[in-house]
Image (cartoon, rainbow, N blue to C red):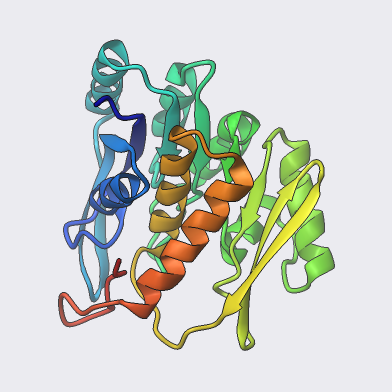
Length: 255
C-alpha cells in the first residue's frame, strides 16, 4: 500500500534523539514515510552538541534534486539549515503546492549555533512566506521577531508579526515557560487555539523535532491542521512520560 511522503531537511544527530533519524521515526509514527536531505553533520551525544559541519551546498542540492525528481513530495519539514545557501536552495526547489512545516532550529539547548546569522535572515525572508506552519519555541519566537514573548499579549503580537510576513499558521511552543502547566498556542488568521497540559518534571532531547515531524506526518495523511497539532502534542506528552536513558546525558523521547 502506498504511503504519503514527507521530505525532512535537517541535520544528522548521531544519538538519534533529534535531526533526521528522530524525524523519520516520528513521521513513521504518524503514518507517513520520511525521505531525508541532510543539511549538516553534528558531533553530539546525549550529553550535548559539540560540533556542527555543514554539508557542502553542491552535495546538499544534489540530494534534494535527486529526491524531488524521483518522488511526489507534498509535505516538507525543515530542521537545522546552517547557511544562507541551505535556506535559499531549499526555497528555490520547494514544490509550489507543498505543505511546509518549518521548525526554526537556530541553536541547541546549550547555545551552540546550528544556523549562522545570514541563514537566520534568509529563513525570515524566503521560508516564512512559504510556511504552512512555523513551530518556534519561546526563544526562537523572540529571535525571529526581535520582540518580547513573556506574556500572552506579547506572544500574540510576535505571532501576528510572523503571520504578516506570510506564514499561514504559527504554533508557539510553551515548554520554555514556567508554571504547573505548559501552554502551546496555535495562531492563524482566524484566531488562536490554546492547548494546555500538565508540565512534567521529566524533559527529553529532541521534543521540538518530534513535534514538527509528527505534525508533518499527519498533514501528509490528510489531517486538518488543528487535528494534526493536537495529535502531535498528545504524542509528545506521552513520549515525555516514557522518556528513557540511552546514554549518560539527557533522556530520549519515548513512544
